[in-house]
Length: 148
Image 1 (cartoon, rainbow, N blue to C red):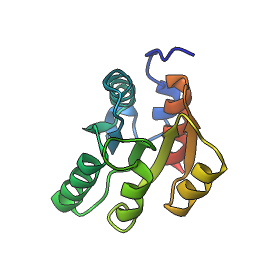
Image 2 (image 1 turned 90 degrees about the vertical axis):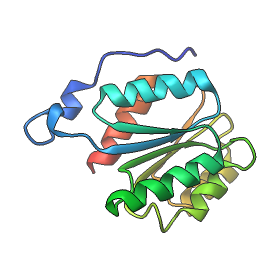
Image 3 (image 1 turned 45 degrees about the horizontal axis):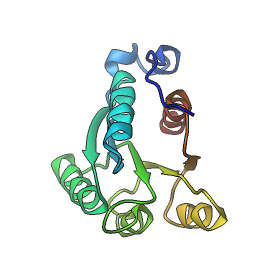
């Protein structure tokens, strides 16, 4: 299933405040595939998120700590692949549970088996998306989870 970039999900955004332009939550995306990372970042940016990118688990941890220190709040959304170079995304999320308290965590995985689902739930993930996925599915899921 190809991943494509579609128009912003304006209806989902407009339910916040006076419109989408008033809503700019932080998001942190960890994905080692540069093209998929670019597409996810562009999609979330179009939907009003201010996005930071990580290409591996160590960058995910570093950016999460830096983001937390700037204004003492975590990003509203963290999207992380399970399989990242050097260390898997779930172990990084496990380490970051306290730092990311309050953030919505969405895990993406090419192999979302029962073990991945259980570990994702244990580290506080609100959802798991199996790859391949449509960007609109990721966007809708992310917006719905953050708006809860």
